[in-house]
Length: 148
Image (cartoon, rainbow, N blue to C red; front, side, top):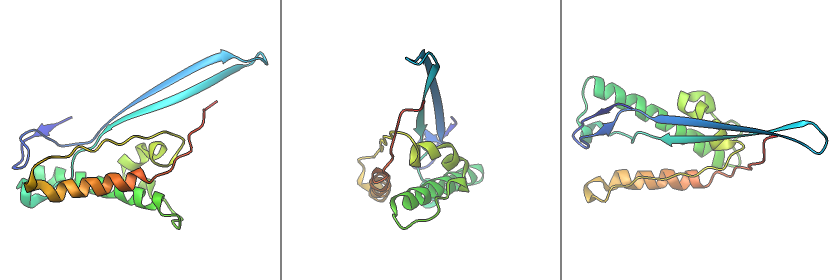
């Protein structure tokens, strides 16, 4: 992960980070056949959304902020579609982030989201935006089952 200073954060993360751990096990069943079970754990650290006015980003920092915001927007669109019972299309293909997280968002998984909030009144709008994001994500209903 790359960190660079902005006017809002001296150690601002400039990218998302996804670490995927896949665990497989096998055992002989009562039927004498090998049975395989597979699990996948995605650990995801999302870069925060960036408001150019507050971060005073320019040049490469501004380009990074645009890409961060585009992927977070795509993730927000997927979450919105997943929690809308009338939605007929889930736009997982709109970003690399949403493609990689499609199992975690609408698939066969248990998902936990931890929202990082700042206590400063100066950043109240970012805090409220993060809470709204987390509240929508909380509404996603997955149906996990054992993968055999």
